[in-house]
Structures are given as C-alpha cells and as structure tokens.
Image (cartoon, rainbow over all chains, first blue to last red):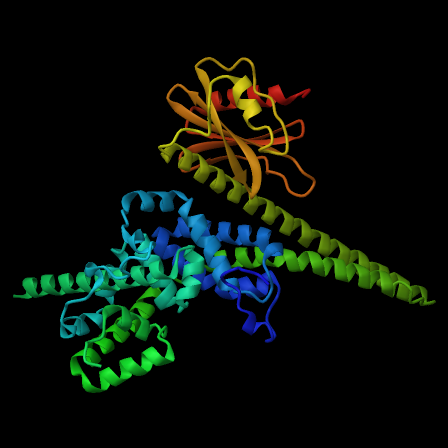
Length: 197
Length: 271
C-alpha cells in the first residue's frame, strides 16, 4: 500500500493507458496552457513544458501505474516552474500570508469573504476581457489554484497533492483567489462606469 | 437552516466538494433564500466563466511534435527491441528460391538503413533537447544561487576545506586546482542535483562575476552533454575530464570562463 497522495486505487480496475506517451500527450495542451499562464511568455512556457516532459520521462520508471498521472506530472511542472527564472521572480514579488491556516487557524480570513452584491458582477462575468485581466492580475499562488480547480477541474485533494500543501490551504487560496477576482471585476466595472459617466 | 451560506460553502458547493449531508443542508437553505441562491449562481457563473477564459493558449504545433518525439522515445526503444526479436525468429523460415533471398536481403538492408537513419535522427533530436534542458536547468540553479540570500553550504576559499566537505555527500571525488587564474577566487560550494543526480556546485568569483561549476560523475547510463551555449545572457561551457562531466556557467567574459574551466578540468587529470 502506498501513501502517495495522488493514488486512486478505485480506478485500477479500469483499462488504462500505461505508456508514457499515451499518458502524457493528452495532457500536453493543459500543461502548456498552465505553463503559459504562469510564465506569461511563450518561450519560457515551452522550456517549462519540455523540462517537465524530460523530468517525468526520466522519473517515469518510478511512477506507480494506476495512480494519478495528471497530479504527478502537474506536480513536476509546478516544481520545475518554482525553480525557474520566472518562478523565482514571481516568488520574490509575492508576499503570501495564507499559511496562517496551516496550523489549523481560520480557513477563510475576513478578506476572502465576498461582501459584494451579486448583481454587480453578473454583468462583468460575461466580459471575457475583464475576466482575463482579473486572472492576469492574480499572484501566481492564487492563479495556480484557479487554473487547477476551475480550468483543470481537479479536486481539492488532487490540488493539495500537486501543490504539496494541506487541503485547508487549497480551500483558503481558492476563497482568496475568487474574492480577489471579484474585487478586480468590481474595480473594473467602477472604472468603466466612471469613464462612461 | 437560518444562517446564510458562508463563502467557504459557496466555493465547496460549486467545486463539488460538499458531502451529501452538507449538500442537503445547503439545498434546503437555498430553496428558501433568494439572496443565497443568487450568490450561489454568481459563484457558479464565475467558475464557469473562469474555466472558459482560462483555456486560453493552444500548444504550438512545433512543440507538440517535439514532445511527441520525446515521449515516443520509450516506445521506440521497446519497439526496436520487439522488431529485432521478430526478425531473428523469422530467420528460421528457410526459402530455397534464390530470388526470394535476394528480395528479402534487399528489403532487410533498406529497412535497416531507414531504421538506422530514423534512429540517428531521433538520437540527434533527443541529444539536442537534452542539451537545451541541461542548459536551462543549470541556468536556473545558478540564478537561484545568485538570488539566494543564504550563504553556500560550505563557505571557504580553501580547497582543503571545500573538497573534504563533500565526503559522503556525493558518490565520487574530485580535485580543486591549487592555483587559480588571476582575479579568480573560490567562494565555497553547494551540494546540487543536475538531471536528478548528485553534483558538486563549485562557486567561484571572477572579479564581481559569480561562476558556478557543476561536477558530476560520468556513468554508463546518462552523461551530461558537452555544451557551449548562451542562455539568458549567461555563458554555459560543458567539459569532460577523467571520469567527470562538468558544466560551468557565468556572465563573465567567455575567455575568462574558459580559462577557469581549463584549470578545473586540468586538476582532474591523474586523480
């Protein structure tokens, strides 16, 4: 029995692809998309994806068949990003205080709770440019949870395995990321109203 | 349920993370609370809209081809082995007609030639990608060292302090040159990992420029490709000496970097 967090024994019975190419190639679009969001640069994103493929290919012998390959390879991508130039730069520019919940404190600080009126944002949610801009303004620790949760549709447990943080931290970051996106959307809406007035 | 739904519950609700019991309680409240229903709808819409906007970048075709080639290396090696064994088993089938032999031999030579060409092409591509990967990894580690506010794991300009520090930490030994080029000093060293294998990261200064030299034991399995490259303004020089592979990186003048590399490589001879 393994203690690996991405293990999913219940899926073992199903016929699954087992070769690296079969497992990795379908995830290439997702890996590249996340790499682009994180690095904001096509060349760095390509380097990041290529490095991820090389590392995972080298470590594939140690990957336990039937376990969660997606979480495994995304974890390699994320760790590779953290040691890359753009990852180091992002870490230095972001001061993240969400580790307060790691010790069992309040999971959702007051700042993460949305106090806005829903009507305000419903209009902005249809505005693709405003949403893209809001996502671009998220610091990388919040952006990565949004990408893994909303875009990649990973469960909190899987995200915790990718990010190597407790599930409480994942929940806290998701709450804060969404609250920040709402604030950004609201600010954008206020600004556009100001311009039109 | 009288209290309104919390922000945490909205998130868990739209992310499908509520347990059956929690979901039932939330639904019961939503049935009677227009404000919470509206908020829940907004949370769901935000998630859906984010998912759509988040799917923003398409993989460049050229990258996809490269990654497919890389990913297929494992398959390719196993398939070459399989086809090799198939060929040897079919050799037992004796056909008396000479023409048949000639055709088979021609086909075999052609197929072998094509296979060899393909293998060489793939090897060249893989070697090129491995070199690029090595350069990127070494550059990342060097930049991380420069960015690090902590001192090296062993700080000393004395080679007799730095070398013994690695005893028991890496599965090989190396020499440090007694005399360094003018203006070059040894700052210390770190234990590093290059391509997942232990390496000695020697830290030098040439004037105000910092230099990292990674030394790794050469094994029969994988070795550091010998490279000379530029990466993000840094010069990267690969070298081999004795049974060690090395890679040096710095933004110093390439001639000075090469001089240091020659000195370090020369120290390994006759270990």
